[in-house]
Amino acid sequence: LIPDLAIKATQTVCIVKPDGRKEIDVKRYAKVEKVPGGDLTQCEVLDGVMINKDITHPRMRRTIKSPRILLLDCPLEYKKGESQTNIEITKEADWEKLLQQEEEEVKKLCDDIIKVKPDLVITEKGVSDLAQHFLLKANISCIRRVRKTDNNRIARVSGASICNRTEELTEANVGTKCGLFSVAKIAEEYFTFLTQCEDPKACTVVLRGASKDVLNEMERNLHDAFNVSRNIILEPRLVPGGGATEMELAMRMREKAKSVEGTRQYAYRAVADALEVIPRSLAHNCGADVVRVMIDLRARHAAAGGAHWGIDGVTGKVTDVKAAGIMDTFAVKQQTLK
Image 1: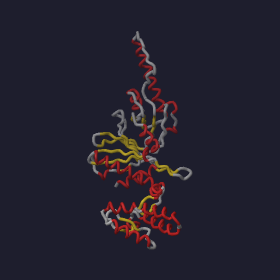
Image 2: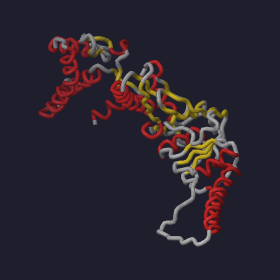
Image 3: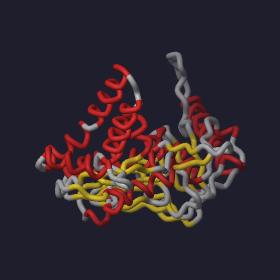
Image 4: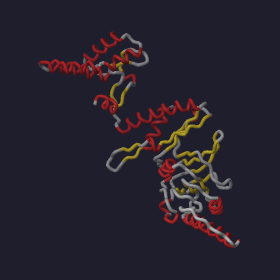
């Protein structure tokens, strides 16, 4: 279950650059959302994003097919002055004027938004009651106080770009790649789903489990799996695991030492002995007879075509690791030997 989730999520966030390099930023674009309750089989990788938010007004639409999404990084409310100001009002009409001016400012913000005809507005800041009223009249759903990281993920799946000022809004800022916007209640909380996206470059991994402890443990395992799958996608070469690679290298170093004259051959032998620590530790951890296993391994690697013999971590016996599917990533082996 966990490997499948990790591989799918990593492949989703993988971007191939024009020069052929692959960029995989799992930390920023693959969000793990833990929802207590439910069954382990309900864990999934969404073809889009899920955020723990609800719409701001109960009469706004909760389900929109192929929504036009607008992402903002500015408040949809009347801005307070930066310096402290005191206003003395003598007539009731002046108070009315002040309120009117505030309303006009908010209406101007909303008119700028309505011009680009979005179905859904998501902002990282607040939305005043007045702005909600104007947006509701234009049949636009609204979500406020979304995290910056979540907003970036939504931008990646919907094709929208985050705008800082409503006056600068253009058609290019609107995202249309999302297939479905919906709000659903899971357990006791409301979650917003932006799914069925075409070619999403970010995703949410939904984890379900009986308790928070189970979910935390699953998340830790998932992050390990993310790193392994990222390494494999970036460097898709594998080497035999179970200590087979180290044993083969040690055997070749010993062979090389025989052809070196003088005291320099002892350096080769020392490296060979050091490399044998890995298979020896594996045999020790399996509870196997270390001496017998090491002698068996040496004999098999000395024979022709014995490069794939290693230790099976479950049984503690010497086995053909390639046939058993026990492999290590080339990137990790390269790093450890460096």
